[in-house]
Image (tube, rainbow, N blue to C red):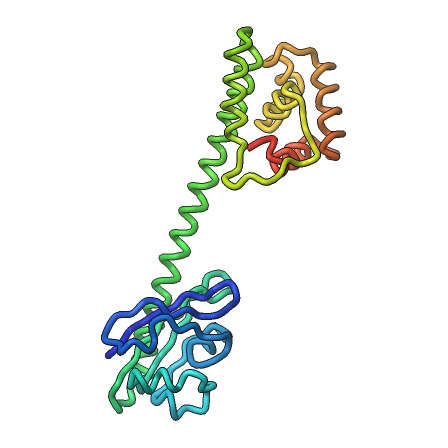
Length: 244
């Protein structure tokens, strides 16, 4: 093929052409195709491969980009969407500058490449998601352990430092203004252990509290967070940035 190139679908469903292999005179790089326009925009819209033996002469697409194609002297062009989930994420192209009728052959090769890329991206995203879940679980465990440890420390300065470290684990990368809900240090101690799946009795044993006292804390926590269950209270606390 004379030119292979690709583009990423933007949040507005446009297609930004920014990856090229082969000679280009400079007309294509940086072009952004609108949804359902031209060969690439059409591939984004219908989410299936397309091939044209003569781009400019074809009646299967709109022709907003004919001037660019003529400048690049491209004839046969194939485009294959890379679909992740139900959305087109990328479009791969292969093009010829000759009069040969090879669009179908290009399309077959390009479709195979698109399917391989889809597989690689899905696997990579799955690994990223698993790593993120594992990291979140570790952060939540460490947060609970720090809160539990700080509750048993008698030295005020050390207790304050331990709680400060625990609170740092709940800070988002891009902080938002403080919400209307706030919990006391002891309430966060109790809720952080509840988030780890401990019963009221287990929480009491860990924090040196009676069962009735733990129940009173949980009732106050659920009222503040407008939650009907312990799980709902944990979810609301995480949403409010009170727990990691």
